[in-house]
Structures are given as C-alpha cells and as structure tokens.
Length: 169
Image 1 (cartoon, rainbow, N blue to C red):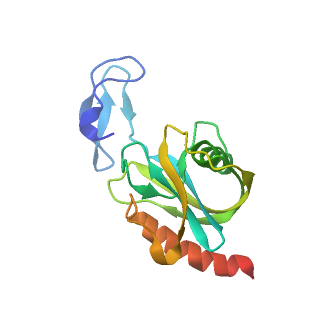
Image 2: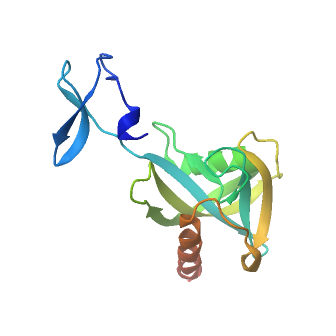
Image 3: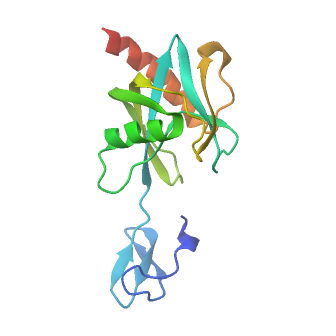
C-alpha cells in the first residue's frame, strides 16, 4: 500500500488528508484527530536443504508469479512468527519442518514487507504441488539455482550459508 492508496479513515470512514508529522507525510483524519501509519507486513521464509539441495517454490501469485522463491509467507495477526513459517511451508510444499534458528531480518527502502529468514529442517510430509500459491516445488543444487523472484533472496542465501557454518559448530 502506498500513500495514494489510502483514502478513508478505518475508524470513522471520513476522508483522509495528508499532513506532515515527524517530518513525513502521513494520513490524517480531521474527524478522529488520528494519524494512520502504513506499517510493513511481516513475512517468514525458511531455507531448507536436503541432500545438498535447496528447497524452492515456483510462485503462482504476484509479485513474482512464475518465478522461483524461498518458501514462506505472511504472518497472521496474533501468530508466532516461527509457527507461521511451519504453516506456510506445509501449505506451499506439503513438507513438515522444524525451525532451527533465525538467519536474519531483511527490509528494503520503500518495500511493504519485512522478511524474517530462518534455517529449517525437513522432518516429514510428502511433496504437494496442489497449493493455489505455488506452481511447483523443487530442490535445486546451489550451483544451479534458477533466477529468483526477489533480489534480496541471493543475500539471504549467502547469509544462510554463513549462518549454517556457525550452527554446525
């Protein structure tokens, strides 16, 4: 969502105006006397390796429809981030996982999401490609990774490789 997308107050449905607050343009309701802040959505993704190959999903939704990505998705309100990761990986792939640990938190200027990347371990399940969210589920050799939907994923994979060295100690 951008500044131009928000038009009405979520409390009283009054039209919003842009007003400077803390040096930035913010949506303001003159009826409620409230500012509305555009907060990013939290996404949880999991890097899973089996037989020296990384699990990726081919997206069936925008952004990046038809491109490969690290499995994961949005964290629901009130949901524990790691539980969201386990749920999203199962929904997208059919695999059950355990979360091993946090690799890092990633954000980019003018992006609407913050990504929490985790190392995870496959513990069961059966590959399922019937999810409406993905077109395919595959394991790829690190030397033969496809083009990824999100440029930040290359940095996340590089950080994951460094994280894994410390995790194994």
